[in-house]
Length: 474
Ligand code: PEP
Ligand code: CO
Image 1 (cartoon, rainbow, N blue to C red):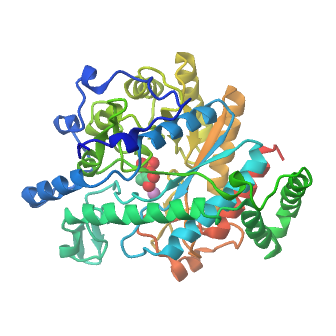
Image 2 (cartoon, rainbow, N blue to C red):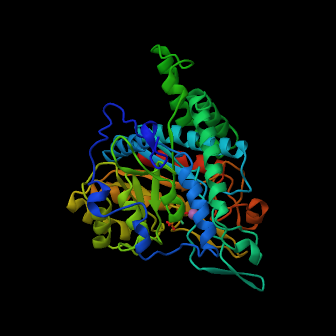
Image 3 (cartoon, helix red, strand yellow):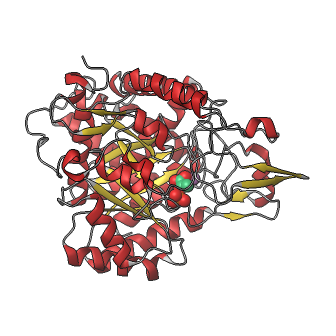
């Protein structure tokens, strides 16, 4: 097999995938995995030793793909069903994965929360929930400033463990290209474990429901959701009564969890981009879905150039400054052939702005007929610095932005396709409020994030129940 190619195993399209259609072939549009290099780029590190970077990238290019082209196509098709209102998207995981906090237990606990949320959201939405993790590759971080002040020191900013270390000393902040290899290998083992967990019985619907029942029973606040949990329980009993064997039916035991991360560090993404031998198309085989962040979606910029040529499904974050014409131009650039499922637009406006800022964008895109999946990131528009100097978010603002997002789509007649959440399975104290009503003075107790504040496990499940209530119009 040509090592630069994803290979037949990578590309094997399945019957009915609709895999061979799509935007023009890369070569016809002057695109190549490296064409981003002649466009202006923001947020990329300045590597101190370019020769060392070259050696690492050469190694990365010879390593196997982490995901396969056929899987990315399957995700595109699943996202197309979300777009049509036939499914709901739950995209969730860490703000930044860490080289220091890497264990089977933390991966399992994160997956457990995502599965629990998905069951509740399935009940709430009445449609299947498509699960996409911010996991197995979410290492690179865009930053608002190239430096940060720690005590008396002015340090280069931490850009995620794929670039430098978060320890606040100058030597740790020097970009080290070998970190890209560590990120690759950590992604590979994370993905391996996720594949085992999701196919090996851990995702069994009856287990997941039992975890949710424990959540409901474990506090007075949780008991508020008893009625929903009881309805899910009744549905499972109904299935058993109809002869569905919950102990052997494979869809009940196995789930699909796709992976995603921000396509920020383009050196790394380019090295993992492989040509599918089946279709001749290029896929970024570092994850199933890649997104372009709020700070890097300039129309004439390197990140857009990279994203337009890969055939994975892509998403773009839209902040308060997004304007209707610019968003339509993004759609034209990233999805000129209007392929369903190809493009997700993830708004992150802030709870106070979403009702005002989102409708003009939705209406402008609707007028063009572009097929997009509208998702809501209720995290990044609601971050503030607490009095103790910690970045945080309030559960009520997170829920408030989701509520605003649903209201906007209800009034525009469009489908609120999903949510994009930063969470962890650990019992951290990083976001305020929620089921345990975490207070400002409790933030220092277990504040361990490598970047932004995440909802802890109980806040995440609480949020899923709240969203289920919203979806059911309660
Ligand atoms: C993120 O998703 O962690 C992030 C930095 O988001 P945004 O680009 O929307 O600020
Ligand atoms: Co973040």
